[in-house]
Image 1 (cartoon, rainbow, N blue to C red):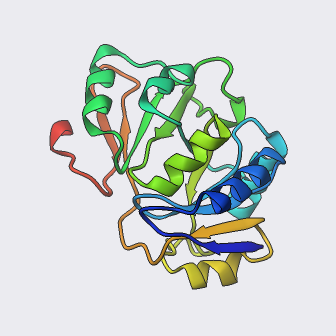
Image 2 (cartoon, rainbow, N blue to C red):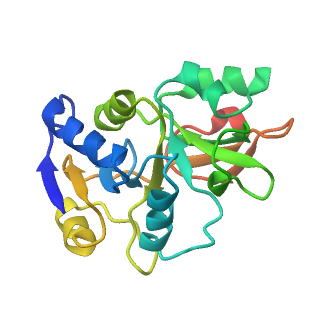
Length: 203
């Protein structure tokens, strides 16, 4: 595994580009978000998606969310009601995963049984620069050990995943909770998981 330490606020572009090259060639990486470290790949590469599921040790994982390059591009991957648009516009970028109805060209491997997908726009320069450079979404699923415990220490993550991923972009210890998951696929918002971020708009 290639390993690079980045400045958390002003990440070195040369390392971002190394990660993008790997993603474009079907690789799997680990990168920081505004909550926890994420395991990522190009959403349009089926083999890479299968690798992520294997790494997570959960082939039937219900929802692999992904990061969009910008808010205006969400409509290319999911359908938003007027209410969903207003809520998401107010909260993004931020520590939220929003569940929305999928559009047809999003890979079926990312759809839930209800034909929905999970979308993130994290408030972290590394994650945002990655998706801007590659030009399309990448998977965002938290780095956990075999017991499902979220890992925050880059050194520990590096040890555990050294032989499983192709590259890691480290940006120090992360201490946040995983993202809050909000289902906006129906008329009323539903809090699926309480995590990071203000949820007062949904209660």
